[in-house]
Image (cartoon, rainbow, N blue to C red; front, side, top):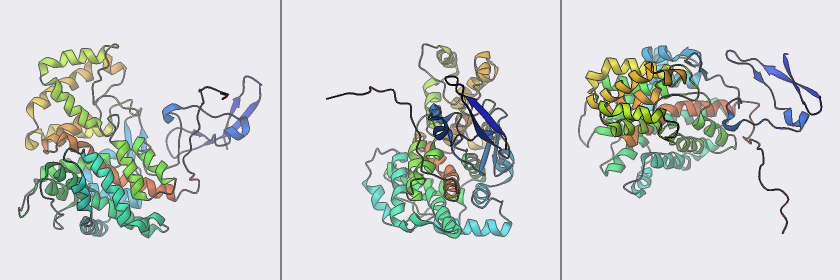
Length: 422
């Protein structure tokens, strides 16, 4: 096994640590024995250089702008497969056959209904409750209805637990929206597909045989696919951290939803649309670009740059193309689109953005498409939750099957007062 040698410059003592080889990507220095050997910890705020686990689900190469689920390139999955295909892939480590896909689809349709008791929970929320707060509470409440999932011991039990939550998330999501408006809840229609059903539950009224256009289903299904998983991001790491304590899987997902709500994470697409509306006109773009460049101004241009990608976000590339293809069919707000396109053009050609690798990210395009689907700003992060639920639960299953899994317990560098006395 290859090793790396570290030298303590204070004492001259040398320590060797193993180098672990991945399938693809950077090698990893195994520092699990660091404290025992040296009496020291590593210091890595934000875990920017720390691998917290081994995973076979998602691979990202931020420098090359590459994203793969179970080895499949995201562009192939997003353009040639459906979101349900991707769900099956993440849960089962292979794409489904036609018969497997049909059975999976039918199972999710039947599991989409929620316990009637949950309606009382929604009714208890105030009128102005944010959908993400309601969503987190509802998913956590599901653990009381399916308490048996606290002790998942077989792969069959894990699949039931996973399929149950994936199926019910869109129903809960639609209920959060309708509760915020004070309008009747719409139950799932077992004759409709996963993505179509969500749009139906969002839009329909009791007794209405609402038709959803194929172009709308295609656009939203693609967004779900692009959000399905994204390696060890903040919300996924939160899910894994909570799961490591032995908490109920739905409680772990609820924690992930709360992490996703943050504006630096899943809440960014909501902020993008709010900012485009604030800019208001192409005539105002230059002033806001100047503010973004001003080091003394706290203003940030939302939807540009990414913690991982130092190249064009591959998901953003797919949505940019989809936006160009469907902008007329979807009826995207021409003023918002004009402002967005003007900002995009500047960012892709201005040295300030190019040198800092501030390319448009997925949030920049997602908000425009979702707004065209008549999904309000407050629900944009909820769409993220629907798409990401399968990734979270796949990560949960993987963690539970990892023989090296330990409860999450980072260390710290203490910088407080020492030896106070009364």
